[in-house]
Length: 245
Image (cartoon, rainbow, N blue to C red; front, top):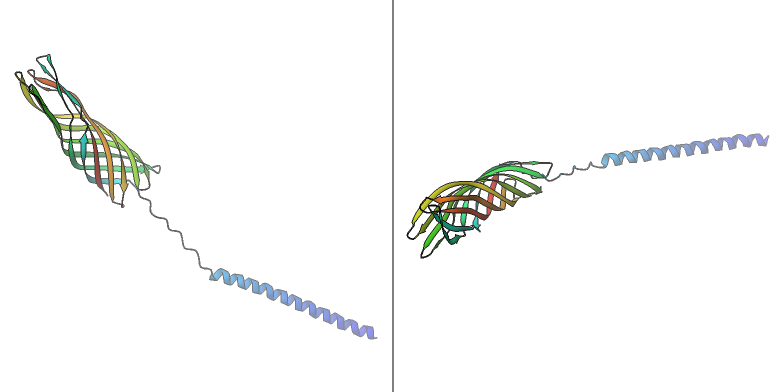
């Protein structure tokens, strides 16, 4: 009889222990879920990362330039009525220049830049010599170019090459004692080639350093009584300032 009374008591105890453990486990799970939910709500979203705008060379521009010319090389030999009188001297023209330019650039792929530029400069590129027998002088008082450009950009800096048409006005004088003299004005066409580097300081303001070789070729100056074959070329280095639209 005593055995029958103990067994129900133990069974009841075991049931209560099982229910208590289950309730504790459910409470722990609920607490964990609630904590995770609180974390997901309280954690603020990350702000998007802003990237700096990339400069583009594409667009129209206008500007000014100034510089110097040097290295002209013209050996002066006079002729008279088809007879060669001899070599009398050399003209090595140099001087100052300054003017303006206008152009357009297009950037692609993504660092290559192509463009077209026209410029016009007033100039004093000249030289002269005088001896007891003969004299000569040469002066380029203005010139311009029309050139395509192609270059490669590193962020705000552009390295480029250029070349194309050149044209200019030349005044050429010569004289030989006892033979005659001439004063010849001509507008000449030729070619130019060069290279440069340009840097953008803002979205609209750029500055450049450029080298050009300009060659107007060889041509006869003077008349039948006295003439010479002039070689008209020079090197130029100039700086420029552009405004990009």
